[in-house]
Image 1 (cartoon, rainbow, N blue to C red):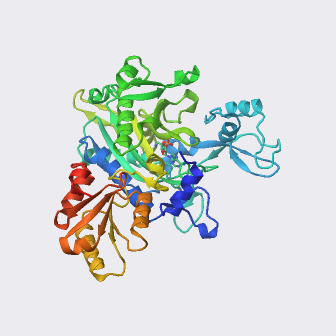
Image 2: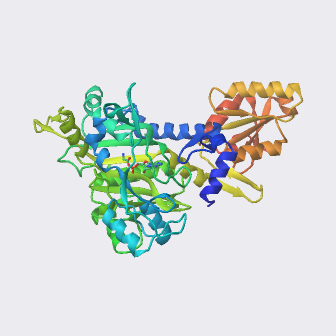
Image 3: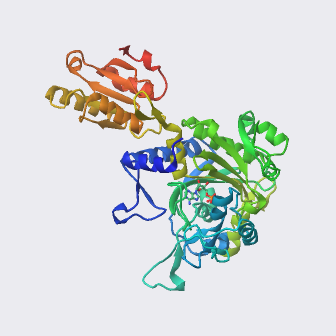
Length: 509
Ligand code: GAP
């Protein structure tokens, strides 16, 4: 696996990701998606929406504004509790996230919201400033991660607003409207994809910890008396994954591979919905070409839980900088709806036809994934250096690849070839994401496309002008077939959807 710095360089060189405002020296924690990056990112979001919303009867989506009424963040607890613990060097004034300083020196996990524990770990390991090397770090202090702004012409206390640190809250505040409009019956989910902002003390690892990022979240609501009653559990109980429960971590034992059935029977995972959503998320990654060996699920330790959660499991990925959270599935109970009822004085409960009583649904599972972290995972699992080709081959799956088909006239100075190539481009551009390239040798053009993950290269040569056929080259195997232009659209479609083997799709050459 290449390092995160090498991945950042590759992404910049190939037009996937740029450091934000680089001509001014860039700004830490902010990145821009380039021409290929935006295509890959849009494909990830499209596939997420298709899997989580369009292909389910129990989930609908919303798209809410980034800035909300400031009371939302009072009610949600983010104003009081959404904080990291910071230390400042009293000599050089460098600021650090305390847990990261501890982890750097000791490899001990310290992302706990307890100042007392941080103080004891800092003493135990004699943590010093890594910038000036002096033993002059301040006492740890809480630092709220929300970005502040002002609405309107006056900048005073009354006009303060916050950029949302999670998309989830707009789902809770719109809960009643969405449930009524979409006539949803429990259990059901409300999904959203959108930007979130966190003033991270030390953003790091390229796209992993950003200050501006995007989330894909579902709040999944269940009847409060049916919290452990997942009707889909049989569909996933045979699925196997490496599990690292809180107990295993406390006992210093290793993660263990087991089926969901075993994990539920042994009460390692206590709630069926958690098992269900963790596996659904894992399967989504695998269905899009991610490597199953790089995933595991890990339960949060008690002192690691967010202020709203009673139990959280993360889907973790083995990044080059260690196993880290890719996605979280939290049990938020009725914390959020209750808080919004209290602060807004509006009734957010539902009428339960069965018991003829009002009930407040519980969010038993909140699958919450960062788009940018998913982007990193797909890049890592696709990145492959081919020693023979002396070239990177980005083995992205067809649904994610930024470009599906590249079209090349054999020579750039022959009008007949150029015109025919444009004809082929026009034929395919409506149905596929195509790229037209005339510059450099054919070999060079193939390799450039391999590096950005393009599935198929189509070459228009002198034979094409006589026989009305073209060569299609496949990215992973470099095999080539000859196909009639009139069949091209149908064949590319079948190839991309795995409906025909490449060797059988035309005459192998
Ligand atoms: N609504 C729940 C929530 O926001 P979280 O664990 O704080 O939970 C969910 O965030 C996901 O959002 C994470 O698993 C991660 O994929 C992504 N995420 C969180 N902070 C991030 C950051 N600073 N940069 C990039 N992605 C981030």
